[in-house]
Image (cartoon, rainbow, N blue to C red; front, side):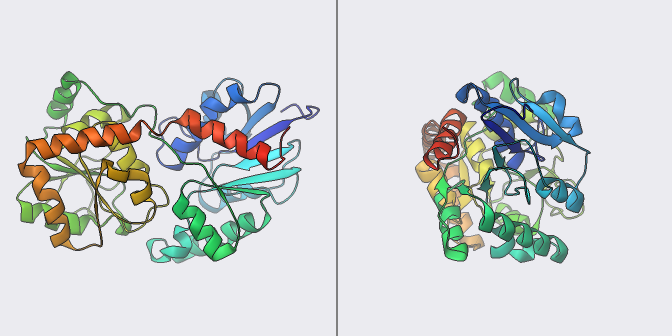
Length: 352
């Protein structure tokens, strides 16, 4: 990074991965657009060494060794020199160094649902969050829900800058859907949930719902073909990003059964691919999904059965939901996210 520049921004992007999901999607998509919005500003990103070659043009790498857990967390908060503004794209900001700091907060799950994490991880991330939220000059929240949680717990205001579907999340053509059906030997009709098999995602309840509706449940993502997945489910394991749009479109219903979401990119991406989405009415999902998804209150299997049944048996109802989802997602874009981020810097007086 050019330390003599009159304006230099360093992004904390240690989760940056070319094909990563969640926070990695935010970092990848935002960085791809920032260089074009701040001409004359020296831009760099703090990344793991193996991610440096795939950073967008115009953003210089500041590398740290490939690491995970506590070691990666330390890289995120270690003192930094040479930046006017440091923007932690996943909360963490340096202990010292930059003139001003910005922290993007994706959720407060380690406070709100600590049981979903190991005790060690929950306590560690709670400490990091407290440090960042008390010290950052500017807080950015990915949803109104997360901003409200920040205000309630920490008494601080955050600028809301929503996320958007990843660049790959577009409606596929019929040939792509046919290829994916054949590649994964998918049943003619099925309910799909994509994501890590973990307690928050309630896959056991979803398997019960699918059984009550007499339709196969297909799971994709980490652990979906492992011992933690329900034995009645069809587990695909890791699915290449290139196949996800057609997989979402092929599903009769895409479920997103979660107990907590600070934003909820998976259902957003499913809607952008033309999926008929049924999701939990938790956290930010009612704000993010709008009328583009059917939202279910609580973890009651009977309520999920009632929500899904019309979509399984009425083709017109199913088609209408898919169309509403596509329309809802046209309101979100990463260009708008990047522009709102730069506007937040300037409104806060962090950049000229």
